[in-house]
Picture 1 (cartoon, rainbow, N blue to C red):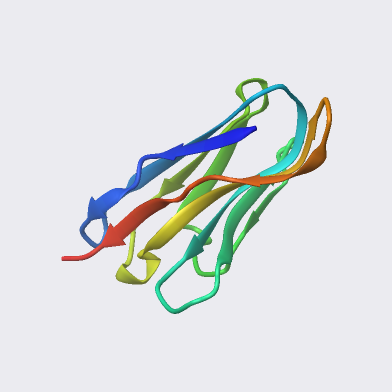
Picture 2 (cartoon, rainbow, N blue to C red):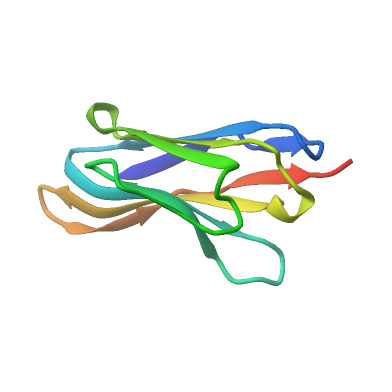
Length: 119
């Protein structure tokens, strides 16, 4: 199983970005897909997650600004980030939790994509 993220970049405060993540491989099901971020000198933190049934969870710091979505048939998830702030600057990682394949049940991580918010 591989997770591949895309959509990071450099934007100014107040602008928007859309991150995408595709999980590939022989996947039978994925319980939850989500996004984490890690800023320099800080621990990795949950940004948003969504279950296969559409139950969403957001960090307080992004509520009202970020929206997570998911396409179960395509094993993809997107993170729409609006009204970006400098404190959103971090490497964003895609996570797939509860992944059932032919041989394994577990979680997987993408390689990360850099988001920089600066004027």
